[in-house]
Image 1: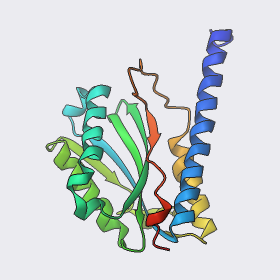
Image 2 (image 1 turned 90 degrees about the horizontal axis):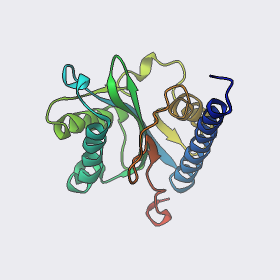
Image 3 (image 1 turned 60 degrees about the vertical axis):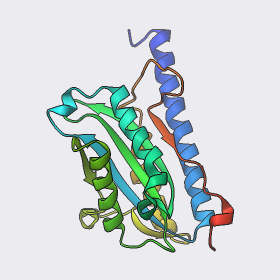
Image 4 (image 1 turned 180 degrees about the horizontal axis):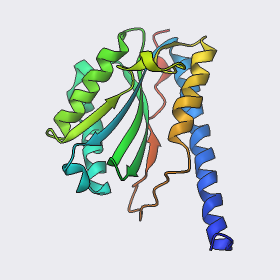
Length: 202
């Protein structure tokens, strides 16, 4: 079956999507650092506790994440200096449906990345009414040899490269692509809008 044209076309389609997502995410990151000289980068996974995780559907996972995003306007203390984000929805036998996320904050006003990442994790638990759990990479960043998270300045090309290679390329890989029956704007990968230049504070 893997030799059939149908199968090869699906593989080619996923490879195209992976490349497109990677390039689009790199453009977003370039635009962020074009507008902001100092950025706090947070890398977090949102998932669900067992036994709830076994019963959470893709639609339910999306609904919780949508609520998390929509409620930003009501949580100014946490999101006032929030810039944008990149996300991917995956499924695994050990986690069920879960999100891989990269958050970007204006580093001119936000420091101590592990504090802010912890606050986002707590907010996810609040949004999910206690059934959500998180993996906070910033809290454990000392164990990473290559660190593309935390404080990154515009001129730090090395850390920006690691952010792309170890962060974005992982999110855009093709080995865990989800093929949902799409209705409306349902997707398994996405990103926020590019921050307005007028708010750059350069």
